[in-house]
Length: 130
Image 1: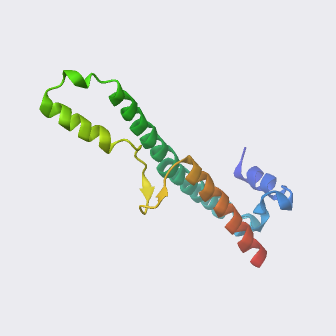
Image 2: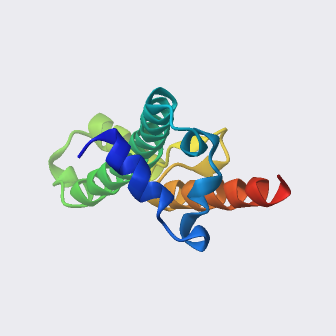
Protein backbone atom coordinates (compact mmCIF):
# COMPACT_ATOMS: atom_id res chain seq x y z
CA UNK A 1 0.00 0.00 0.00
CA UNK A 2 1.44 3.37 -0.98
CA UNK A 3 1.65 6.38 1.29
CA UNK A 4 -0.96 8.14 -0.85
CA UNK A 5 -3.37 5.32 -0.08
CA UNK A 6 -2.56 5.52 3.64
CA UNK A 7 -3.17 9.28 3.63
CA UNK A 8 -6.43 8.76 1.74
CA UNK A 9 -7.62 6.17 4.26
CA UNK A 10 -6.61 8.33 7.22
CA UNK A 11 -8.59 11.26 5.80
CA UNK A 12 -11.66 9.03 5.43
CA UNK A 13 -11.77 8.14 9.13
CA UNK A 14 -14.75 9.55 11.00
CA UNK A 15 -13.86 12.90 12.58
CA UNK A 16 -14.78 11.81 16.08
CA UNK A 17 -12.68 8.63 15.96
CA UNK A 18 -9.19 10.03 16.48
CA UNK A 19 -9.49 13.68 15.51
CA UNK A 20 -6.60 12.84 13.21
CA UNK A 21 -7.78 14.96 10.28
CA UNK A 22 -6.75 18.08 12.22
CA UNK A 23 -3.08 17.18 11.96
CA UNK A 24 -1.33 19.64 9.63
CA UNK A 25 0.66 16.85 7.98
CA UNK A 26 -2.59 15.24 6.87
CA UNK A 27 -4.13 18.49 5.62
CA UNK A 28 -1.53 18.83 2.90
CA UNK A 29 -0.95 16.52 -0.01
CA UNK A 30 2.78 16.66 0.64
CA UNK A 31 3.91 13.05 0.93
CA UNK A 32 7.19 14.15 2.53
CA UNK A 33 5.53 15.84 5.49
CA UNK A 34 3.19 12.88 5.98
CA UNK A 35 6.11 10.46 5.90
CA UNK A 36 8.10 12.59 8.33
CA UNK A 37 5.13 12.87 10.67
CA UNK A 38 4.47 9.13 10.70
CA UNK A 39 8.15 8.24 11.16
CA UNK A 40 8.64 10.69 14.02
CA UNK A 41 5.43 9.60 15.71
CA UNK A 42 6.39 5.94 15.41
CA UNK A 43 9.91 6.59 16.70
CA UNK A 44 8.67 8.52 19.74
CA UNK A 45 6.07 5.92 20.67
CA UNK A 46 8.53 3.07 20.15
CA UNK A 47 11.26 4.79 22.18
CA UNK A 48 8.88 5.48 25.04
CA UNK A 49 7.60 1.90 24.89
CA UNK A 50 11.11 0.43 25.07
CA UNK A 51 12.40 2.72 27.82
CA UNK A 52 9.29 2.94 29.93
CA UNK A 53 7.41 -0.25 29.26
CA UNK A 54 9.75 -3.09 28.48
CA UNK A 55 12.93 -2.23 30.36
CA UNK A 56 11.18 -1.06 33.52
CA UNK A 57 8.81 -4.02 33.66
CA UNK A 58 11.57 -6.52 32.94
CA UNK A 59 13.81 -5.03 35.62
CA UNK A 60 11.05 -5.32 38.21
CA UNK A 61 10.26 -8.90 37.16
CA UNK A 62 13.93 -9.92 37.36
CA UNK A 63 14.21 -8.28 40.77
CA UNK A 64 11.25 -10.31 42.04
CA UNK A 65 12.81 -13.44 40.57
CA UNK A 66 16.08 -12.87 42.45
CA UNK A 67 14.16 -12.40 45.70
CA UNK A 68 12.28 -15.66 45.20
CA UNK A 69 15.44 -17.60 44.31
CA UNK A 70 17.27 -16.30 47.37
CA UNK A 71 14.54 -17.73 49.54
CA UNK A 72 15.44 -21.28 48.49
CA UNK A 73 19.22 -21.01 48.94
CA UNK A 74 20.64 -23.33 51.59
CA UNK A 75 22.13 -20.49 53.60
CA UNK A 76 22.72 -22.69 56.63
CA UNK A 77 25.64 -24.31 54.78
CA UNK A 78 27.44 -20.94 54.46
CA UNK A 79 30.25 -19.76 56.66
CA UNK A 80 29.34 -17.23 59.36
CA UNK A 81 30.84 -14.37 57.33
CA UNK A 82 28.88 -15.36 54.21
CA UNK A 83 25.68 -15.80 56.23
CA UNK A 84 25.93 -12.22 57.43
CA UNK A 85 26.47 -10.96 53.89
CA UNK A 86 23.61 -13.14 52.65
CA UNK A 87 21.16 -11.85 55.27
CA UNK A 88 22.22 -8.26 54.63
CA UNK A 89 21.68 -8.73 50.90
CA UNK A 90 18.37 -10.51 51.42
CA UNK A 91 17.14 -7.72 53.67
CA UNK A 92 18.19 -5.09 51.14
CA UNK A 93 16.17 -6.63 48.32
CA UNK A 94 12.93 -7.41 50.16
CA UNK A 95 11.15 -4.85 47.99
CA UNK A 96 11.43 -5.40 44.22
CA UNK A 97 13.50 -2.78 42.44
CA UNK A 98 11.61 -0.34 40.24
CA UNK A 99 13.22 1.96 37.74
CA UNK A 100 11.80 5.42 38.36
CA UNK A 101 11.65 8.55 36.26
CA UNK A 102 12.95 11.45 38.29
CA UNK A 103 12.97 9.23 41.35
CA UNK A 104 9.18 9.55 41.56
CA UNK A 105 7.22 7.73 38.86
CA UNK A 106 7.81 4.02 38.26
CA UNK A 107 8.65 3.18 34.67
CA UNK A 108 6.48 0.22 33.68
CA UNK A 109 3.72 -0.73 31.26
CA UNK A 110 1.10 1.07 33.34
CA UNK A 111 3.08 4.30 33.13
CA UNK A 112 3.53 3.83 29.38
CA UNK A 113 -0.22 3.39 29.02
CA UNK A 114 -0.85 6.54 31.07
CA UNK A 115 1.60 8.51 28.91
CA UNK A 116 -0.15 7.45 25.71
CA UNK A 117 -3.60 8.24 27.14
CA UNK A 118 -2.47 11.66 28.39
CA UNK A 119 -0.77 12.48 25.10
CA UNK A 120 -3.93 11.66 23.19
CA UNK A 121 -6.02 13.76 25.58
CA UNK A 122 -3.67 16.74 25.25
CA UNK A 123 -3.68 16.36 21.48
CA UNK A 124 -7.48 16.49 21.43
CA UNK A 125 -7.54 19.52 23.73
CA UNK A 126 -5.10 21.36 21.47
CA UNK A 127 -7.20 20.49 18.44
CA UNK A 128 -10.32 21.99 20.01
CA UNK A 129 -8.45 25.20 20.88
CA UNK A 130 -7.51 25.87 17.23
